[in-house]
Image (cartoon, rainbow, N blue to C red; front, side):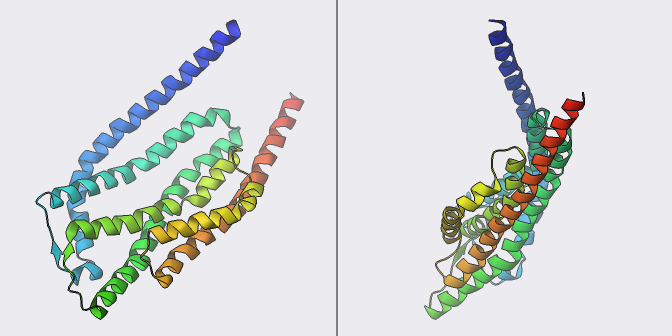
Length: 254
């Protein structure tokens, strides 16, 4: 009976701690959202001054399009600002269940994750997005179509192409983190490789136009990221086993 009560209290303690961390994140996000209202406008203007956007005439087909775009960018900027804190709170919540060495290692994943997210955004915005826009423009010319670009549709397409890459580029660090937690192993990743390739091919097809070259520009980096994830997982798996063995030896000495 006492064991049951202790378990229930432990569960309640964990739920209470998680609740406090979520409240902290929500409060921080609120203040980040307030700050992002001042950053959204210059960000939108900067994106409109890009070479690809300058050649297009932007139109608002609805009165609410400008405010919709403004709020979308404010939310995205606030989320990016808050993301390191979200990752830290997640790490702090699960860190008591990790070995001391693992805590230090997994904490270093946070700046790596943010860096990979920004790398993914940069790759898709500076390399992939201009190629897709130019391809669409050339296709419209060949078909003798006069493009009337809605600013809402333009930014929706931009976000649809860039944001997924920001998250997908974090695949190696996510795999590394899950491996250190013992949830994923490199053997499992090798085993499901062909299924993972199929999923990545589908994702590549969803976020690019139906054209082979642009599809390859997306899919090849994604497949490369998966292979890098396997290599990273092997290293993380080996270090996790070493940390576990070291911890066992320290306990024996005690």
